[in-house]
Every structure is written in C-alpha cells, then in structure tokens.
Length: 134
Image 1 (cartoon, rainbow, N blue to C red):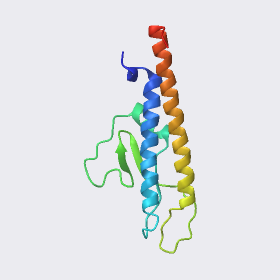
Image 2 (cartoon, one colour):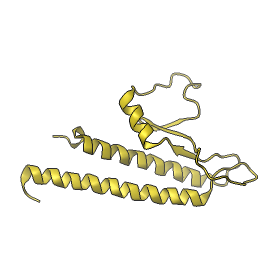
Image 3 (cartoon, helix red, strand yellow):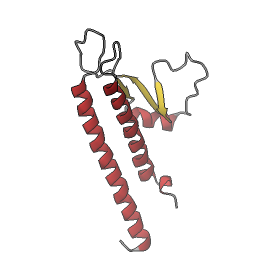
Image 4 (cartoon, helix red, strand yellow):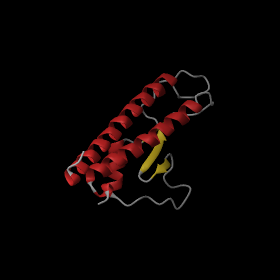
C-alpha cells in the first residue's frame, strides 16, 4: 500500500510542498531586499492551491502573455506579488521588509515541523495497525 493513496498522507505531503515553496520565495525576497523596484512576493494561499488542484486540470502556459503576474513553483503552486506586504517607505521602490520576512520564515518553519511530525505519527499509527509492533 502506498501512503500517498491515503488522503491524510497526501494532504500532509501537499502542505509540506507548499511550505517548501513558500520558504524558497521568502529567501528570494530577502536576497532581493536591496534590489531597486523589487516587489515582495508570496505563494498563493494553501487553500487556493488545494482548490486549484482539486477543481481543475493543471494550467498550461501556451503563450508568454498567459498567467501574467504569476510564477509557477510546482504543480498547482503560484507565486504572485505579496498583497499583504507591510508598507515600506523605501525610496527605491522596494517593498521587502526584512522583519516581516523573518516572521514569515519562522512561521513557515514551525508549520513544516508540525506537518512532518503529523506525517511521521500517521506512519507510526499505520505501522502499528498493520504489524502490531511499534
């Protein structure tokens, strides 16, 4: 039996993929904190990601004009300009606020640890149910 065939494990895996993509985008924001005109970005919410995966076929980009303002980072994952970025008074037009990115990185790390822990506990539970040995 594949663990991915069970909805709990599929959801936990999807959440960890989303969190990994978000951490990558946060790192890119921090790396571009001094780039003039750079706009902070974030991954579309996890709820939107789940909805897009379950309700529609994956989007195909057949023209450079399609899906403007988004950047695919994985199946069903999109990166877009951060609408919740703190207001920055940067003269050069950069909207990255390092404090906000640090908070998001910490939240993302903690959420990843939680999802990984739940996945591990679920695996232990399935193993115990099948073998009776812990």
